Length: 330
Image (cartoon, rainbow, N blue to C red):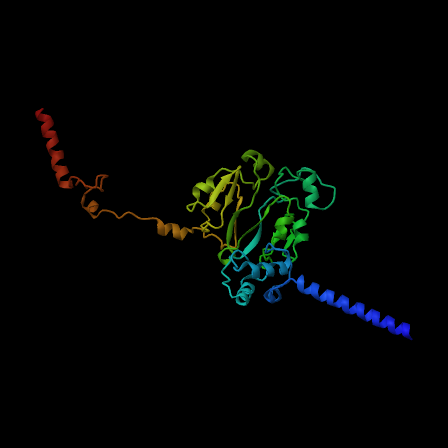
């Protein structure tokens, strides 16, 4: 009995000592966490897509609390409503951010970009890009294996069975950037949605010279620079034989679309252009008024603007009678 009592007392004493050690260690090495981090994390969508630039929603919440300002911080999934809630929790100004959307900058359809070989390997753009230039003559365009589709966590992009190119659903896309990171050819770009979801962009990333690019794809940008000359807002630059439209400067006038000889510049969600009808042409045609003096024997206005008066019929008859007499005298 004494042995049992001694064992219980010994174990109890050891437990008390260890508990005291753990208590002291927890106080000494305690890490303080701002309770606002948990509050911000609760209002976030918990998509953990990384589109904000941080490792998950918890990392974004921690960054927002510690930064002291929400400038340059935006949750693409939650959008402006979520950022307004975050701002109210932290007592900061949410600011405004323009909505973005993923844009596929390649128009190399089966018609525009005929295939020259057949790839028989792993169905992965990353693997195909590391092995060779692709199934067509363009070594810059889409490989069509669908890495972007697999990377999208919101089912906002799919492969078109006709063109074999990825198509982005604007309503589902949250601009998380997962497809941008997954594309080894860098043909997917996050661009401003624009007013009424309208935007203009160069759907090509080919940097070859004009003749080589046009031979590989009928809709390739040939770097002619006509669009840059036509743009009145200096929104287009041409570098390395490739035109690029800066969406922050573009005013959607669409003048560049009309002058592009290959159709490489795309306009999205615009109404159809108005065609000039015959009635409008007739209205635009001005009819020159006839001079009223012409009926009384005067001629029409000359280039100088003066209307010389022609001889009346009576004067002409008198001159005709005088002419024979003058000839007989001579």
